[in-house]
Image 1 (tube, helix red, strand yellow):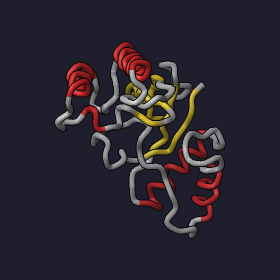
Image 2 (tube, rainbow, N blue to C red):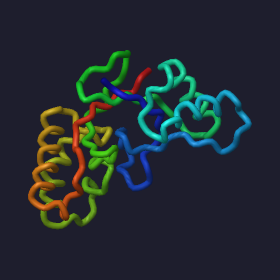
Image 3 (cartoon, one colour):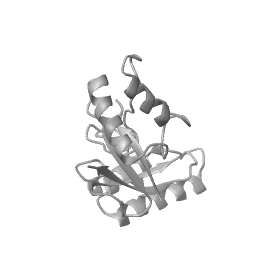
Image 4 (cartoon, one colour):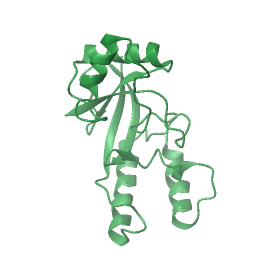
Length: 173
């Protein structure tokens, strides 16, 4: 089973070309467009995040209306724990997230002065990221996910405990 989100650009602290979970979601600036508001209310029904409230056609319409209303380019993204998308889609790569927080969106894979273990992780895993700042190969994503889980087990203070999982990310056309 997979989930949909309507997303735009990465949050400010993410890598510039990041296409995973941690991206801007639509939020109304006014209530003038009744169709946009109706779709947004359904989208945000159970709080922001993953939705099954709207049909794919409604999600596409919501993405288009969000682009017009908010002045940013929004798209429909599909997230799955398998490498399959039930719709024609472009594969972005594999994200590693826990509690909908992505480690690939963090500052771990930047050119900053990471120290110690973070530096080792950066040197080993960063070259495995694709142009979308996601893992191209599932094996690399699984290895990174296992490493995070091992770090939690070794020292829960050093690494945030979370239900780390590999999520395949698709742009639905």
